[in-house]
Amino acid sequence: MVRAIRSWMDELVPDRPHRSHAGFVTFVADRPGHDHHYAINASHMRDELGWRPTLDLHEGLGRTVHWDLENRWWWQRIREGGFEDRRRQSRSAATACAG
Image 1 (cartoon, rainbow, N blue to C red):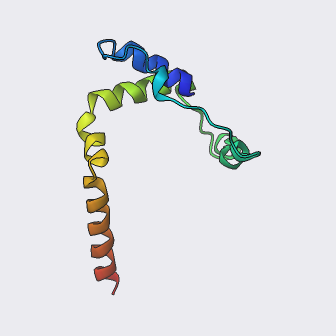
Image 2 (cartoon, helix red, strand yellow):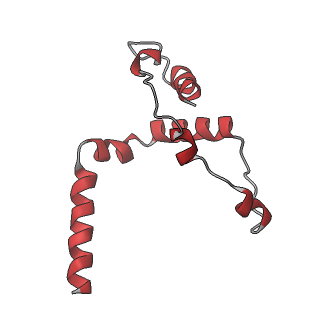
């Protein structure tokens, strides 16, 4: 998936000074069984709820990368720390209401 995201970034942001986004990723050894911890079994959604994805993974990743690039205002606030401040305020307000 990382390679697919890098590929989308290279395609959608061709004018970056570092043309390839490959240098932004460092692969490290993973803990044994780690991937199984995050695996999703979607059979319940499919069998019990009748849900089916409308996009394949590659198209969905591409749309997500495109949305993120078109909506930088959303993730830049998170990156700059504003998100954490709002989250703390929400928790304080929820605690005050519950108390």
